[in-house]
Image (cartoon, rainbow, N blue to C red; front, side):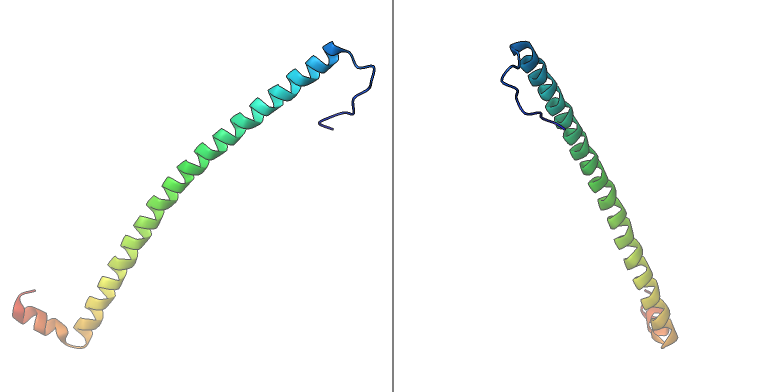
Length: 84
């Protein structure tokens, strides 16, 4: 249990040690939260990079498919005439 009910006979030294322990726990949790935020930011950067690469792959595939189908229906000849 994180907290214990106060006994009316609790000494000041006991209260101070409990307060120090509580402060230490809060500092540790605060540090853990900061580390999680840093990790989250790093993961967001990695995911953004992956997303950009996937978008590039998508457009490359769509462009290749468009050229293939254009060639299949005879538009390749028109491209050759115009030198494209």
